[in-house]
Image (tube, rainbow, N blue to C red; front, top):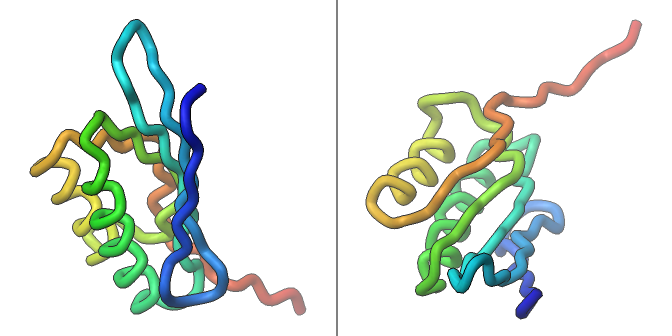
Length: 105
C-alpha cells in the first residue's frame, strides 16, 4: 500500500474523508471513504462540495465510498454524482438515504 491521507471537512461535527493510495496491476488508485453529516442538509451540501474539490486534486483514478446521508436527487447527491460524470471518479457502495432521529415512546 502507498500513502494514506485524511481531510477534515470545514463544517459540522468532526467529519472526514480518509483514503489510501494503492497500486493494482501497475495502476494507481486512490480509494476514499467518507460519512457526511446525518443531521443538517446545509452541512452535507458544503461537505459534498469539499469532497469533490478534495478528490479532484488527485491525478489518478479515485474510488469514493461512504455514506452521504442524502436521498437521490438532493443537492449533496447531485454534487458528487455530477463530479463523477465530469471526472473519472468512481462511486461505490453509497448508502443513499436520509437518517432520521428515532424517538422511542
